[in-house]
Length: 320
Ligand SMILES: [Zn+2]
Image (cartoon, rainbow, N blue to C red; front, side, top):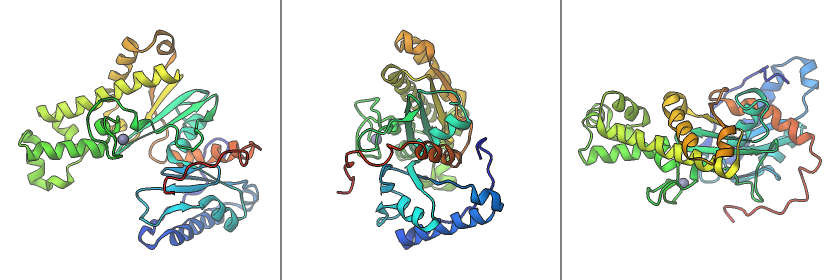
């Protein structure tokens, strides 16, 4: 609805191993069930379908270019055209973090903001840039991948590059560092955890708990993550002049002010004077399913934009 309230929610397992056709079928079934769950008046007032997907995506053609967690055959999938044809409604796709940013702008921590950035600090680090009220896509739709902003000359990232923000504060990267610390015999706390549940399932939460228990190695991993985040925020403030930096994601939710406090301090002391006096670094407000909230403003924005389709250059395909 216009106020962000939700009329129906259908959850289902994604049949990843069955390939793209099965995944599209599952999407169609979920959409039909959601449509059947609301009143006839609401059903007849539906104007479009908003789709949020991990990137990279081509938002203009509505194609999921490639996504790591949906199986090896799920690439170059024209999900918007498919679901549009099957449901008889226009469908619009964007990267999950972009849709989340639209959700926070419409209903959450970025209400009233025309220029802000959204960050999600979780297993990985994702981002979105909203400039003059619109998502900044760049010619290929890949803009806003702020988690891969370099903050160091070293530190291997999962993306293959070196020194990315995600390599320091992303949950998967911190867990890798923690597992190496166990192997190197550097952390009594993590060694005890590894003995308890197995070294391969050590996760960011264990490191945070180790820090609270006084383990030096855990504290240094967490500290490094917070410093990397703070340094990146200074860069975002200087390069983008955002009104707000809205931060969501599991690690941010768990760390709270411990993550955002040092970032505010670093921005206040080292960012350029003019943008630092404007920016506010705040927690996201919409929680884990923020992308669902973003579906509504995504559809409304694209429906009202006659220039949305056509007139764009063809993005470079990540797989081509
Ligand atoms: Zn990276």
